[in-house]
Every structure is written in C-alpha cells, then in structure tokens.
Amino acid sequence: MALFTRKATKNSLKILLSMMIFFSSMTNIVKAHDIPASVTVQMYVKPEGQTLKLLLRVPLESMSEIIYPTWGPGYLDFEKADKALLDAIAVYLTDELRVYENGELILDKTVTAYRAESPQNRAIQTWETAIENINKPPLKNEERLYYGQAVLDVLYEFPITSDKSQFSIHPTLNKLASITNTVLRFIPPETGERVFNYIGDPGEVVLDPSLLHALYEFMELGFFHILEGTDHILFLLCLIIPMRSFRALIPVITSFTIAHSITLISTAFGLAPQALWFAPLIEMLIALSIVYMAFENIVGVNQEKRWMMTFAFGLIHGFGFSFLLSDSMQFAGTHLFTSLLSFNLGVELGQIFILILVLPILNLLFKYLVQEKTGSILLSALVAHSGWHWMTERNDALNQYIFVMPEIDSAFYAELMRWGMLLIIIAFASWAMYEFTKYIEKRFK
Image 1 (tube, one colour):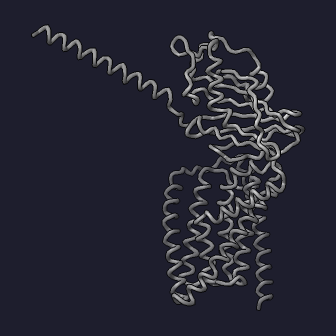
Image 2: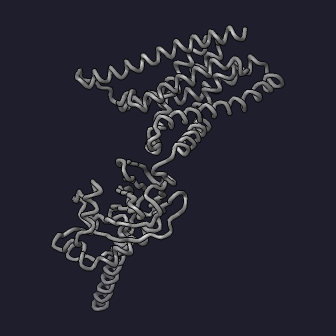
Image 3: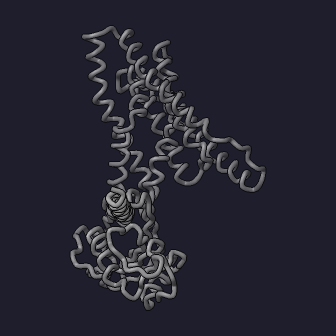
C-alpha cells in the first residue's frame, strides 16, 4: 500500500511538472507574439533620376511573429539571421508600402539592402549617414545585441519615370503595433527636406502637393470640420435663432468669419501662446461662448450690436480651429498661406450650408408649431444645457494644469511682442468691422 502511494505521488508530481512546463511554454509563445503598444518608425523618401529610394528603420520587436535565431541568453545571431530578416520584411513591410507616381501605383519594388542594427546607432538621423550605414557589412555576434532590442533598416527602390513627378505614399504599417508613430522625411530634388509626422494610418500622403491639390484638401477639411464640430454648430444655431434672415445675419456672420480668420492665421505663424494650458482654456471658453449666446437669446438680444460679441467669441473659436489645423499644416507643402485661406473658405462654405439647412426649418417651426418667443427660449435653453455640461467638464480638465508665472527674460518680452502684434491686428479688424456694419445699416434702412 505504501509502495502504491509513493508511485501515485511520483506520477502526480510528474503530471504537475509537465503541466507547469506546458503552461510556461504557452506563456512564452504568447509573449513572443504580443503586439507592442507603440512603436516609432523613421522613413526617408528620395527620388533620384529614374529611381525612388525609400529607407526606413523599424524596431525588430514589432515584427514578433518571426522566429529569429539567437545564441546565449537571447542575443541575435547575425550570422544566421538573413532568412528571418527577409521574412520579417516580406510579412510586415513590403505589402504595407504603397508608393504612387502621378497618381499611379508603382507595382515594382525591390529590397536592395537591409541591416539589423543597434538602437544606439544614430546613422538614421540624416539621409547620407543612413545610406552609408545600411550598405556596411552585417554586424558580428560579438556585438551581443538582444534581438528584442535590435532595429531593422531596410532600403527599397521603386522605378519611376522622373524625379520631378508628383509622388504620394500610403504606408499603413498596421501590423507593427497598436499605435505607430511615423516620422517621414521627403527629400525632393533641388529643394530642402520636408518632414511629416503622423500617428497610425494617414491615408495617402501627397509628398509635394500642387497648389490646386492643397486648396481642395484644406477646403474639404474646413467644410467637414464645421459639419462634424457640434460645439461650432450650436454656436451658429445661437446666432440664427433670434435673427432668421440672411440680411440680418450678414454683419454677424461676417464678424465671426473675420475674427476666427485672424486668430487661425496668427496661430499658424506663431503669434499664439505655446503654454500647455492654453488649448484646454480655449476649449472651455468655446463652451462658455455657447452658454452666453444661448442665455442672451433667452433674456433678449440687441441685434444691432450682436456682431461685437460674435467678433469676440470668433477670436476664441479661431484658436480652436487652429488646434485641429496644427497637425494638418504639414501636408500643405509649400502652400502654407493659401492652405490657410482655403481652410477658412471651407469653414465659410460649411457655415453657409448650415444656414441654408437650418433657416427654413426654424421659420416653418415658428410659423406652424410653436410661438416664436417660446420656441426661441426652448431651443436656446436646450443649447445652453449642452454648453453648460461641456463648460464644466472642460473646466475640470483645465484645472488639472498648473499655472506658473513666467520668468521676466528675453523670451517673455518676445512673447509680449507677438501678443502686441496680434492685438494691433485685432484692433484694426474691429475698426473695419465697425465701419462695415455702419455701411450695412445705412444700405438696408
């Protein structure tokens, strides 16, 4: 009986040990195939003659489904790594890089060089050093580089008809990580380097957009930003409710347009504050503008002077537009100012579209369903309710920031000068708007 018990215990220990080994191996497999939360990819695109060269650096850990040869405690075996590195390139990169010349997809692409490298290697910082480095002989095992710490440099070549063509690229790179941050440097012939920085899949990126392309893209961006921006739509609704005619809305909408154009363009040229708290402050003030205009509708509004408050709040909304546009201006190429104007035009077209859609609905509502005064109060109260919730939420977010008094130094005085320039522009625009409203009043009396 004792012998039987010892055998049973021994067998149980063997089963337990086997299960531990099994689950341990399964855990290692899962870890090997974990997708990183975030990786950074560095990329160069350079057309030369009839060849476009694309060089990129990717962390090896982001291509984790490939089994890389190792030695010792996990060092990458450079002498046996060629097949695994080529498999990683084929699976994770080649199909994810789509390059276009004059709108046509370039189907032929060739990997002309690749090299596993230490992340401490800084050759990727310039095109010249990156090209020189990738053509060096492979590293030796004496480097003792863990495969999970290595990076992979890859050089592609695409046949093109001319290096003066218009090039675009759609690099999805979705397999690498949950979040992929890409720094793309385009080096066109005879001009300087152009840098793009985006997260995830940006769609097709035109590397050197024409004037017409930039105008269309930014006009479309402005138009749909208005249609998708609930806070801006509610602000416009507050303007429309008490004055439901295009003639009455001319000075109000014009003042809003001029005001947000001033701060939007000024921010693009570096005249806005750079403090971390500035963006949440503006978001809170946008919500406040909705609440104020809604309450003004409820208690009664002086229609002749309303353009003044609209102008003041338009300055705030312009800063809000600029936060959206700050990440998109990199896609304007050399057409910075025209793209800003195009975005503004898109915003105005969006506002006109909302006016055309909302004005008839409000007029029918107040004519057949509810009294004008009662309807104005009810609608404004609903808008004020939404604006109030946004204002309190955004104020809570603003309170998370610590306000620190700036040091009185040369940078402080430079900031004051920028603000002074912006105030002069605002003062001149206010005077021009005042003269314009006087003209409109005389014209339509």
